Image 1: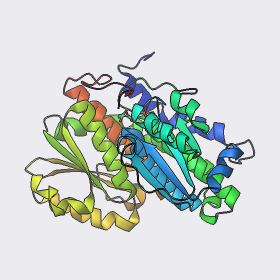
Image 2: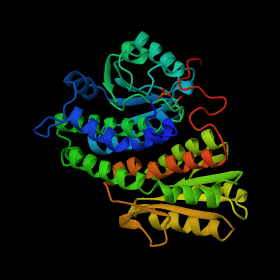
Image 3: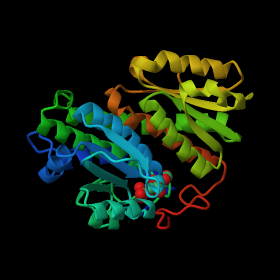
Image 4: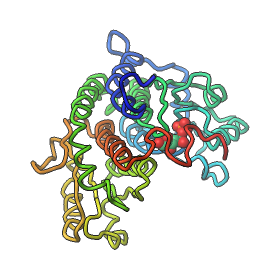
Length: 359
Ligand code: F6R
């Protein structure tokens, strides 16, 4: 039930700090050791490449998971859209391992790929919110998201849970393989920081309602931009906004705008920039400057260590690899308020179903 909430989406956004704490409890022992089924860890370490297959928001979580697994565990990862992989697969490595990311565990596009993977005898893991779902039953292994039921069509807490569980997996792989950068990564502490940071952001939701009324409620087009992991979040932020507000929104690699898309910037076009990483902060800021000088309404979501005082919202610091867990929250709230302020059905957007069981 929604309890005192007007919509499931808002409830599910607000639940994210407790989902992070639950994942930490489920996957760490009282001694602080990461706990993942050893068969999963051994099977992945026995492979030479991970293929993540997913759709929509889960695909976007996979893009972040790729960066986390490659950095913490040193294993090469490819991420694929299930509906493409199904009929146009890439050349596989010699010993592939498949990860299916799916909140529902029922997505037909992903099921089609898994059935091919099973025919070829490759090992697989489904990371899902629904125990005994089809993808969970048909894969070799399962890891659960522990996010609690997600009712709103727009996925929120499943995205952050998928990222956190992929980090847990990466941590377990690094412990077993003695991979230094993962061994030194204090995931338990980071997840605690993330949970507190998420709480700070959801407590500031009024700010995002105000911003939405100021620059989005009457907009026809909008852009989210970022570099690296911020680009991955920009794709998810854009999907969230377009699917429930019906504003045509695109996520772009900040550096790509000037290669064509900047032609779409007009007086008042909203451009929202993510800036969480020192490495690219300067460049993304110049890209925002370029659109500002062409009349864009710019709003910046930045992390404290790289923030300027007039940024739109400043997120508390967490490790670079986990910044999506915080930076996506303002984007979820922006989508929620924009949909609400435009008078749409937040939890049941037009033309969409919670799980897509046709190819
Ligand atoms: C967007 C959204 C969809 C799902 C996609 C995959 O908010 O919810 O893009 O992420 O249909 O669904 P699952 O994760 O159930 O396989």
